[in-house]
Length: 213
Image (cartoon, rainbow, N blue to C red):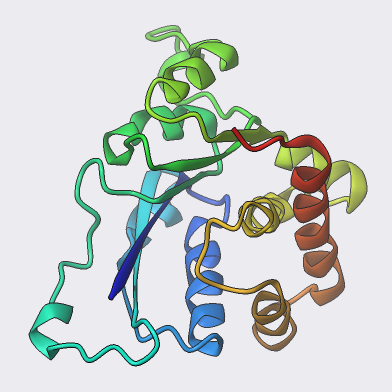
C-alpha cells in the first residue's frame, strides 16, 4: 500500500483549509482507498499561521491488505512529507521540519509579514534566502507568485490557493487527477469559472517554466 503525505501551510484567510478539502474531495472521486488528515480551524479564523495534513493510502492492483496496516496517525511525521504546498514563503520555512530529500515544495512567493515585523520586533528574511534554505532539503522546489497571477489574470488574489493546486497537479505530486479536481470545483465551489481558470493558470505556469531536476 502506497502512502502519500501532503502538508499545506499558510496564514488565516488564504484558503489553506479550502485547498485541503478540495484535494480530499477529488481524491475520493479517484478512488483513493483511505484519507486521513487534520486542520487548525481556529487559527484560520484568526489570521494565524496554520498547517493541515492530508494522508492518502492507495492499494496497488490486486493487493491484499491487513486492515491493521491502515491504522495511522492523521498527522504527518517530521521529515515524511511527500508534498508541501505553502501559500506563504515564510510558512514554508517554518514547516520545513516536515521535509526531506523526497519532498516536493510548491511555494507562493507572495509574502505576508507577521505583526512582529510591522512592529519592528523581527525581520522578514529575503525570499531568495527562504528558497535557498528549502533547496537544502530537496532539489524539487517550485516557486511562483500565485497571488500576483491570480490578481492579474482573474482579478481575485484569493484564488492563489487554486493556482498553487494547478501547479502541484502539473508536477504530478498529488494522488488526484486534473479532471477530478475540475469536477470537484464545479460541484463544490463558488466562482466556478474563476477557480477553473486559476487551476489552469497554475498548471500552465509549471508546464511552461519548470524543468524537472
